[in-house]
Every structure is written in C-alpha cells, then in structure tokens.
Image (cartoon, rainbow, N blue to C red; front, side):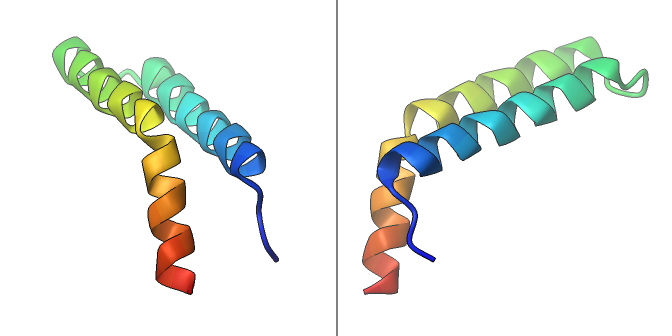
Length: 60
C-alpha cells in the first residue's frame, strides 16, 4: 500500500503525539527525561518530510 506524503505526515504526527501523551501520563518518567524526549520528538516531527523521502527512496 502506497502512502502519500500527507498521509505519512498525519500518521507520524499522531504517533508522536500518542508517545508524548503516554510519557506525560506515566509517573515513572522523570520530568527532565520527558523534556529531553519531547525535544527529540519535536525534531523528528520537523524532519518528517526527509524521513518520508528516505523511506520512499529505499523502496525503489
């Protein structure tokens, strides 16, 4: 099944948001670790077009 760039972006954002919610609700996650992971996930979100292009190129 081929996925468009928009579909990929939408699903990627949903996944990252779900991860953040899960970490925020977990009492075992330290606040500093949560902040650091949020920064990492934000950067992943920023580079989602690059990730999509990389995945598409790998398939060809």
